[in-house]
Image (cartoon, rainbow, N blue to C red; front, top):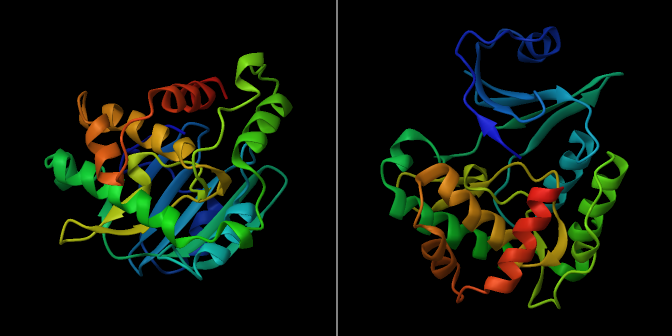
Amino acid sequence: MGVSIPPPDAPVPARVAALAGAARVTPVWVNGIGGVTFGTDDARYIKWGPRHGETTMAGEAARLAWAGGYLVVPRVLAHGADHSHEWLVTAALPGESAVAPRWIAAPELAVRAVGAGLRAFHDALPVAECPFECWVQARIANAAARGIRVPDHLRTPPPIDRLVVCHGDACCPNTLIGDDGHPSGHVDLGALGTADRWADIAVAAMSTEWNYGPGWEDTLVAAYGVAPDRERMAYYRELWNQT
């Protein structure tokens, strides 16, 4: 899902202001469906946006609670919804997004951290205990529910290389990097679920071009610890772009 930096004077929705209380809020990200994440000066993040068929913030809260038993992800403080919007409040984690200015200026270090962080993510989460549905089937079903026609050739994925608990939106911004240049946590787990590891690797590698420019894809795959699988990468990229 696309994200960008909102203007510093972006309006603060009434619900966000109420959740922030006395804390000062600063807009941090705006996503492709108009949702905005605000940071507060008391170390919280408030994610607010319209209801959407692809993921829900209640679902993300459940995924964060489960994944938090195995690796570093935001701790959920509150979540809720009304007839049109949802919100999720989490405690801030150490580190900065892999696309913070300091890491954009050091692309090789950032890309390697994202690749290594994704491998650690996959290694830490137990597939057999994951209560969340298959990422591929869920993505196709959600796309169909939103009126998106998924081409027939995408309905059957390649044979699974290694089944893992996938992040589900492994784009570079969703890895946090600490001051030491190593991955320090993961955010935006609303689409977490079991799938072939290449579902995440392909999207993470593809997103390097959006964030750092061309030429970094294989660096990320190498940092993950595998050789590029062009067939699986092509399938999962097309699935991502089509849905």
